[in-house]
Image 1: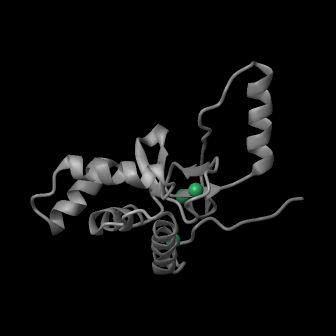
Image 2: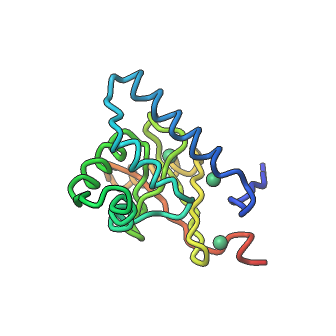
Image 3: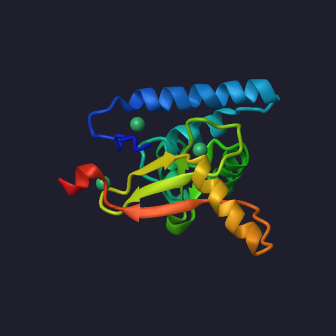
Length: 159
Ligand SMILES: [Zn+2]
Ligand SMILES: [Zn+2]
Ligand SMILES: [Zn+2]
C-alpha cells in the first residue's frame, strides 16, 4: 500500500498545529494529574514555533525576549517534563526538540528531516518499528528507546 503524504507546506495553517498540540498536552495533563505550569506551556509553544527543531539555547533566547531573567535550568526542567510525557521529541542528530501532536502514548517516532529547510515530519510506522524490534531481538539486544532519523530533502525544497 503506497500512500502519499504532504510534507508541511509553507501555506498550511500552523496556528492550528500549535493549538491542537497545546490542547492535546492540556488534556493529557488533566487526565494524568500533571501540572501544566505556565512555563511548561510556554516552552511547548516555543518549541512549536515551527516544524523545525529548536535547540535548548534557542528556546532560552526566545524566552529571554519575554522574561529577561530566564535561566537555562528553567528551560531544561521544562524540556525534561515535556520529553518525559511525550509532548516533545528530541532529534538527537541535531540536539534539538520538536513538538509531538499526539503526546501520551509512548511511541517510536520516525522523523523525516529536511536538510534544506530543517523542517521535520514525524511519521509513525508500526511495521517499521516492529521490524527494528525483531532485528534487535535476533541479536538479543534489548531496546530502551527507538528513534529513526531520516535525512533528506522535502518535496518543496526539491522544487
Ligand atoms: Zn504546522
Ligand atoms: Zn510523537
Ligand atoms: Zn525542505
